[in-house]
Amino acid sequence: MKQTGLEDILPLTPLQEGLLFHGLYDPDVEDVYVSQHILDISGPLDTTALRSAADALLARHASLRVGFRHEGLRTPVQIVPRSVRTPWHEEDLTSGPDDAARNARAEELLRADRETRFDLSAPPLVRFTLLRLADRRYRFSLTFHHLLLDGWSLSVVLHELFALYGDGGDARALPPVTPYRTFLGWLARQDRDGARAAWADALSGLAEPTLVASGRSGSGTAVPERVTFSLTQEQTEQLTGRARALGLTVSTLVQGAWSLLLSKILGRDDVTFGVTVSGRPPELPGIESMVGLFINTVPVRVRLRSAEPVGQLLGRLHQAQLALLPHQHLGLTDIQQATGLSQLFDTMVVFENYPHDAGRLSASTTEPQDANVPSDPVHVVGQSTSDRSHYPLTLVALPGTTLRFRLDHRPDVFDRTQAEALIERFVRVLEAVVGDPSRPVGRVEVLSSEERAGL
Image 1 (tube, rainbow, N blue to C red):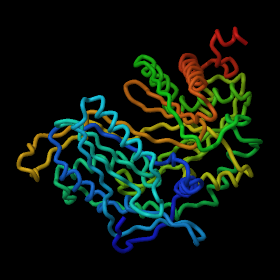
Image 2 (image 1 turned 90 degrees about the vertical axis):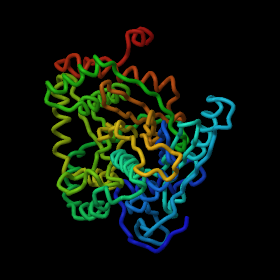
Image 3 (image 1 turned 90 degrees about the horizontal axis):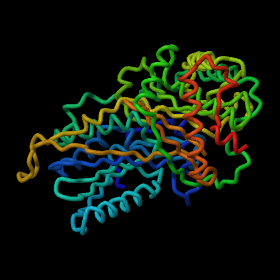
Image 4 (image 1 turned 30 degrees about the vertical axis):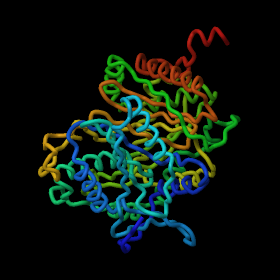
């Protein structure tokens, strides 16, 4: 990509260092950390205005223009060009014979885009694709490397993109950007030695990692597959009510159920798994609208006692995480070194609790650049995100009127049948946790009556 000058050179966050390692490890396989967000758009879209909005977005946020360099350096850095040319692909698919053929072609193009690796040293690590499916129907994708963005930042980017579209790419109507480097400066000022000590204390006595893939054959490079499921509205209300009654978050109940599942299937009373934390310090002005990678992966350790009521286990879990809240900035590599273990877990739990109002993703251009294009609004009528990780199992919870889940599983370790069985067991444990928090931990059932009869 054509670049003009260098604006800045910045350090990496701990998670960026980990993602960069995975991105460089095997350049011949698909990079699982290439993400793609797809929007189905209805209405009189001004394609020129949308492209101008994408240009303005990259000009506005330095964090979207970065590339990563590591060769010949003691530590990798991210370089920020002053400007970049926006990678934009536009294609008209209306000549297809019918909707099915056009949608199939669109899926083929977007899948190829998603599977194409980025050269991490050549910014920008983002691509835009706009496909016209029919009159007033479009499919638009933002493909990016996870090094640039987390879920919260993606929401900010999408809302700003449509605001810029409505203003013809003029960013003056948007508030000033709080640069990502402000967060990197805050991160550099944190007490890493104190954080290491806190994590070493929290994980002291941990004898071994919690590995669901131990003893299973796997290439380690397989692209995860996905199984989705959801609670009913009644189950969601019961879960929310139980969390409120216990003075806990829904996230704590989900994590507690996951720890019980791990304990039962591995026969362990001391388990660890990874969680994703937002990483956005509330004391930093403008943090809610910053764009970049703020999240971090940290371990959760749960020691289970067979006779202890489930509600008390959840309370201990909540208090332990509160105590570690000031130390969640520390990188996973540093945390592992503090324990003397090279690995702590191979499963993740992600609770996607960030502001995203799909209803705000609509706009009209104030002055259409084509006189034949009406100025009534365009609307996002559907959207989906493809994001993955390298772990054998990742449970993602998506809050809403009904609590939705997805289980990402590496097929070289767990096939779909096994993944679906794990889902059934997780839901069974979650129902037990919600139904009777006074139940002893040792009496929480994981297997169904049919499975027990079979054994």
